[in-house]
Image 1 (cartoon, rainbow, N blue to C red):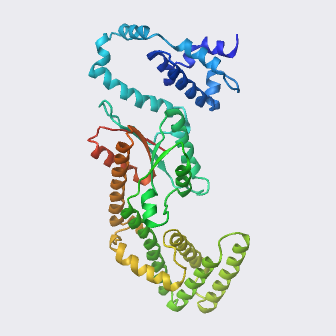
Image 2: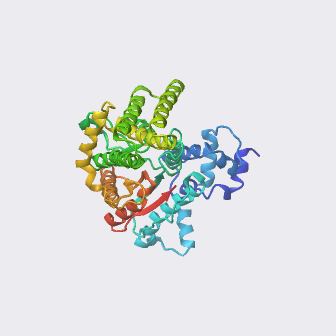
Image 3: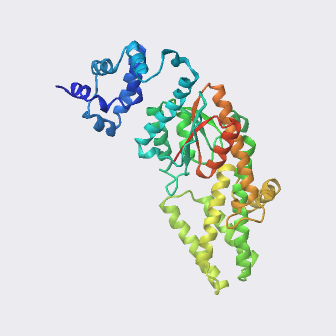
Amino acid sequence: MDAIDDLIAKPDVLKTYPFVQDLSKTALTTDVFQNFAEQFRLFLEDDNFRKEIGLKKGRLTDEDLWRIAVYYHKPRREFLKTLLGAGLSVPALASPVFAQQRPMARVHELLRIFSKYPELKLAREPVLSPKAGAPIVVIVEDIHGGDDKEEGWKVELLQLELIRRYANINFVGIEGWAGPEVDRKRGRQILNGEEQLIRHLIKNKNYVVVGLEDEKFQSLILNANVFAEFILLRQKQRKLAQLGVSEDFFRYVFSMFLTIFSKYDGGERDAKAYIKETNEIIEKGKQMYPHVDFGFLLEALYINVETLCLTIKAWHPVPLTEGNLYTLENILQKEVGHFFLPDYPVHPLESSGIKNLQLQRDNAAINIFLSAMRRYRRKEGIIVFGRGHTDGLVSFLLQKLNKEVNIIVII
């Protein structure tokens, strides 16, 4: 008995998989077989699936797959008999009750598929709709790379690949991109969030990708992020002033850091140069203000200025000079300063005004996503967005679709 015979002899192993179950529901035409073969081969790329069905590594031929398909296929008449044996009459196939079971079956199929992969762990209980034909939205909670921004985006990519391959969903709405039309209008592409993931998906022909950023709200949020760093910078300036450090010396330190970031782009040589110049600043500070712990204060100031400069480089490509930054600070004060209410506990971005702005951004994202689903005639789709936005996204989905939507959130 070869491996295929052995597999056929143990039908319980495969019959739990939806693409195998579907063989019993229709005639075994060429198109049906090709669809079965394609999905089977995708599953075979997963070592866990191979182990579960007892097949060693190796490629299955079309003849092998045909033997499996023929075994699991049942004529249409036998399929109807199965339904009748379960107490359903033939007219029940077209009844509203039976029709409502089909979309729910699809949701449970997705949950069963997700349960097979630890990468597709549910973040919360799914929202299920009893309405026939209700759309299915999978929200992938993006953690923006976590502690490893260079490699973290690959976690979300793996999740998307698993969903695409095994659940056949490739329609993706993503945070951090406003779409090609806005790119052309701006004359450049502005990305925030998981930039590497966005660039990869845009180029990947296996996905239909929709940017979920509204042009107005993306600009406001990005400018608010820059202005928040200015607020933190001024807080540190006031702290130094309380310790007796003059404004002139603060500006000297600030301009030195700007020079470092303007000249150096990373690497070992840059790191050595940075250490040398930073030590010079610390020594000068110790001589002028011996009572101040400049090592601690400059480290905090350095991180603040570094974040400020990197943010400006990404979203406001202006030369990093002291004059340019003060001008930019004044412009942003007028544009987004009113969002920063003095009620934040630790970080300026925790202000209630900023949280309200974020909710408006989430609302706009859902409008864009649902509009794109209608335009592309999709009933299933994926949203990739930061974890902190999930509550807002779920709320707006339920509100705009009158709760007639299925929502699965994975982490």
